[in-house]
Length: 204
Image 1: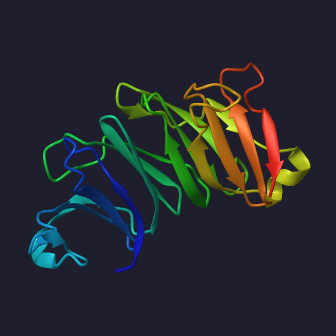
Image 2: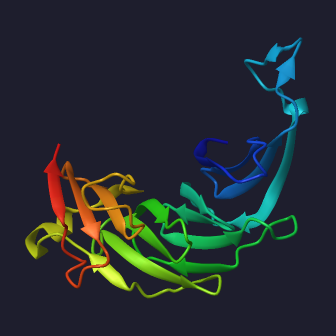
């Protein structure tokens, strides 16, 4: 099974717990039980040193992105299924809520406060913002962030991140950075009434 996405998740500062996504849509919860031997750090971790639990979830599509924030994590499949999970649900974990973006999907981002998620897809809406309320991922986007209309048909967003705390635009979690198929990076200020338009654009 090819691994298509992976993320470490909070585990009380032990830094040994991760979620792994596979190309067949399976999610696994893995804990590194022992990574030391003979007083040193092991270069390879054998299967005997892992706790593995398959989650109660499968979408039969490659899992393109896994991201987490606070008490939740988000799984996004290549076919556009976005599922929100609780990090503290009893094992096996099951999604709290799932939506369909209806497009080939590439990237995901979840705000540090878990108030919204952003998804990068292929057109017609390359970058969309979905609010999260009471552990529900709302199916309709609150914002659709698109380039000029004549460019939208050949657009896709392959990467999404939060602007760094010392960025010129401030430290708000509502300032996000997106990397596009055409080689441009856009900075969006979601606090602005003109939020769908990029605050700044950098061509790479």
